[in-house]
Image 1 (cartoon, rainbow, N blue to C red):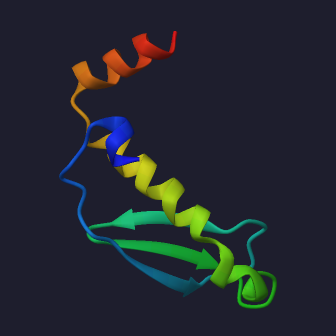
Image 2: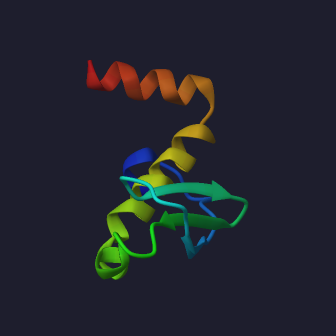
Length: 80
C-alpha cells in the first residue's frame, strides 16, 4: 500500500481490540499511533483474530488523510 501511494513515512500502529456495546459491524478508528477496533463481545468474538482487513482498511484511510491535496488530485486523475 505504501508503494502504491508513494508514501514512506507511515507510522507503526498498535492495533487494540476494544469491547464495544452491541453494534452490527466491526468499526475502527485511528487515534495517534493506535488503531482501535471496536467489537461486540459476543457477536464478533470468534472473528476478531481474523479481521486484519479492518486494520489495513483503516491504514488506507490514514494514508489518504495525510496526503497533500495535489497528491490526492494526481491519484484521482490517474484513475479517471
